[in-house]
Length: 114
Image 1 (cartoon, rainbow, N blue to C red):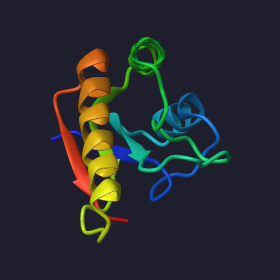
Image 2: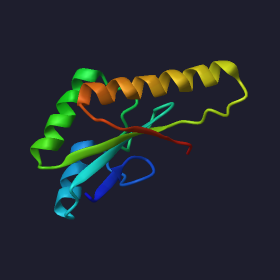
Image 3: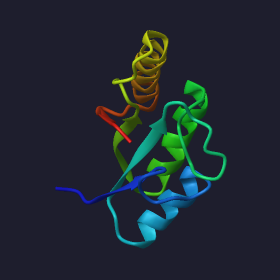
Image 4: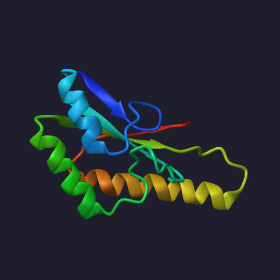
């Protein structure tokens, strides 16, 4: 089993994913998990919300070039909103994170209610 580190608003808080990946490598981790919140808007913490698939693919390459795997993408969202439009935005966000995972060749996406 590989030991991984979550880089997100609820894990290792860094301004950019490559910074967190380098830190994970220094600490001896084998892989990282990357978070994406809905809605995004975290200007000071790395977050996949709003990334283009091509940029996410490039990020995945940078992380793998460090010798790290990407174990999963974590989709932070809350499906229990009362407003149907808010629920639709959150479902769309989940689909968006799944699309990023495909672009990044990451096999696992899971959700977390934050």
